[in-house]
Length: 190
Image: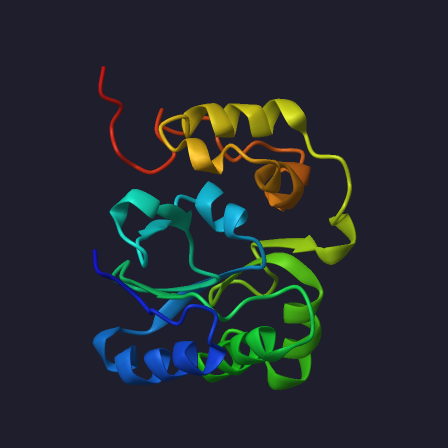
């Protein structure tokens, strides 16, 4: 499996340019995952360590838009997001329309109205769509604590930011139920 990620550091133009320049390396994209919060992508197991200031300052980062092709290869864009009206979500709209995930007249509302958005080309409706109205609601503390416990080896993620922004924990089902012991896909070392 190949994963390519941009180094946009919040620059939407750089993310768009990276998508355009790297598009030829992928087959047809069949799934798109878009997030507003870093934590939602990290809960999905999509993260990397940003080491701009050296490895001793590594901090878990995540893509805001993940495009997955039929071979399972992934393109990660860090400055294209969802959840509001702005440049980042506008770029996400453009990409989702160009890749055939959504019609142009529905893209702005779909992208702007969700904190997490998972689309598949073989489905008429989103696979997952967490509406922006849930922002600020109480989180399911027990599920979030389980997630933080699994990430114990990354103490910097144990912050109140995770409690405030992981909108995934507002769902009734637990995405970690039945998952392997390590949310990042690596076997636990005993």
